[in-house]
Length: 128
View (cartoon, rainbow, N blue to C red):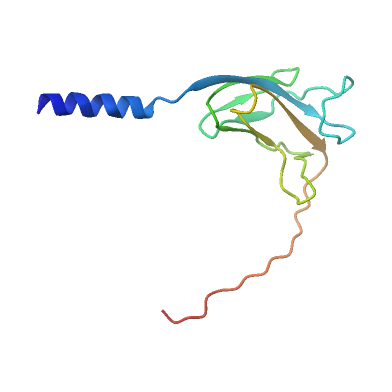
């Protein structure tokens, strides 16, 4: 019995260990909205970045450091007064995969969120 508990404990520990990597980068105001950090574009301070489990804030230059599991999504929490960029399909471009790169620059655009939207609700009309 003692061997089974030890083996189970070892398997539990090994299963919970994932490759941790250190991710760094910059959150910046993308003034020309080209999704590239140009020389004249500045980083934004006090923007929250998360890996889905923990968060950190950017420093006064818009830089951050965050430990994450390899392959985790690194994303920005949209600050008030700013918009996250979207692609042609309107999919937000405010995240990156930590497996792809470890220096992640995240653009943000200046603007206000449009709170007006249309929605279509429908349900399954079956009685069961």
